[in-house]
Image 1 (spheres, one colour):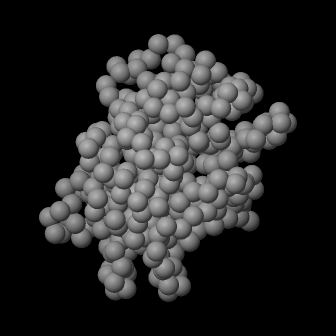
Image 2 (image 1 turned 120 degrees about the vertical axis):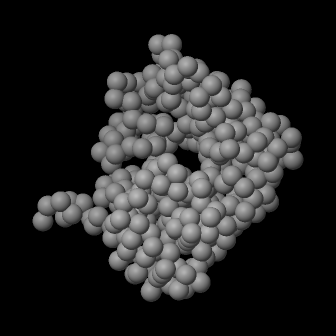
Length: 331
């Protein structure tokens, strides 16, 4: 496994992040534990979750599965850099009681304690704001985080789905307060969705944030969706968002060109999609959310995969980026 430091911190994390969103809804507890054991054995030390994972009436279930895994001992907790998130409505019926969601100081305090209980640990290494809260002053958010850091319940704070200007706003205010500020940003970023290159990634680099891409294969589209469809093994890949995308002729042509290119070079689409992200400036590591051991093994191979300049240039032709800001929308 390869490691890097998370943004400007001294924290060393694996270049592959184990995403746990499927633990519970798609993968049962026993199989989830086996996947975490395999990831840790392979050197993956960065695990990402969120308080809402489990979804619906089972919100919090994913954190519980991590908690029962940590409880097995064997230095599991000590070896893992644990990241979770706060913001979402935790009401099972979708109607949270007032102050049971978003980023008020009250909800942050409540949510941290609830996550710690489910995770069966005494601290969270990286506590991430799952979304921008436009109704809570940033000073209130930092006040709450500073208290948690002083209490030892949280070590670092990160953002998710923030715009570039929100990253700047949050860290400028933190600097004025004498707080450490955000150390990471978790955003959607992949070959098909490169908008983050305009302002989010440059802002993260400017302020010393590590960037942790979610949906690195764009909901399975970059994982060989057309080939799986052709071979009869893509029921999940061609349903929902992926299915709608493949129904668009332009998108389908892009994906076909992508799969043809990789077949020509003897590369697996899912592995190449992850490996491409690892070549991008400012990227700490993509979040891989495996449901099976096969998917985890594929993600692990991506960390060792070296893409040639020829392949990288061809990928840029198939999926051109937006270009730098502001030149991409001005002169």
